[in-house]
Image (cartoon, rainbow, N blue to C red; front, top):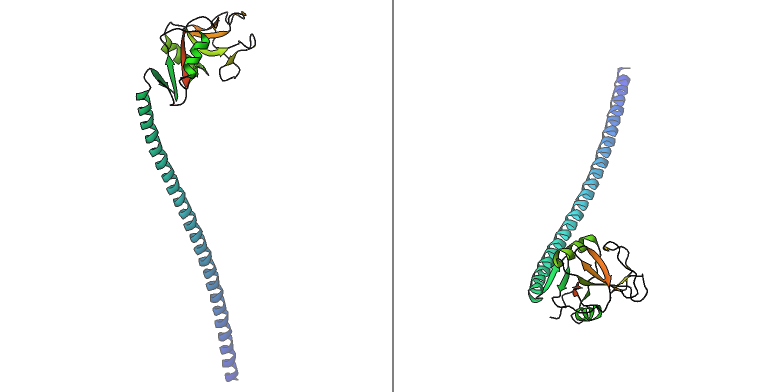
Length: 208
């Protein structure tokens, strides 16, 4: 009887040990799974950090190249500015103000022969710039309604959308088809009249 009891106890002990071992095994499997997941997460983070590092290195390289290009552009611009005697540089454009007087057509011819054209005034800031450099003299600008009376167009064939006309101008006269810029604003006059003029170009191909 005692022997049978001992065997039963041993059996229960073995069952308990087996249960504990099974639990430990499951715990180890769970830990292993967690470690595997953590490892994969770390590898993913490492990959992301590597990609971010490469992106930052690429951006840094691009910025360095842009910086060097800007240095070259600056040097080229300074050289160019030193060669274009009589021209004024302002916001990526060159402007030439004449000291002699010609008709609108002759003034434009002077500009085009030098890789430029009569000035196109795009906004108030540029208008203020023109006003500041021209003083109280009137200058031909690249605006005319010679093709269709009242339909003002710039020399690049774009239509005038807003202007800086002086008081009652434009006059809508059949004989006043070309525009001038004056300190107080624009006015129109006969294209055959003789005035000073302003050339403009955005390139460095200026022929002196």
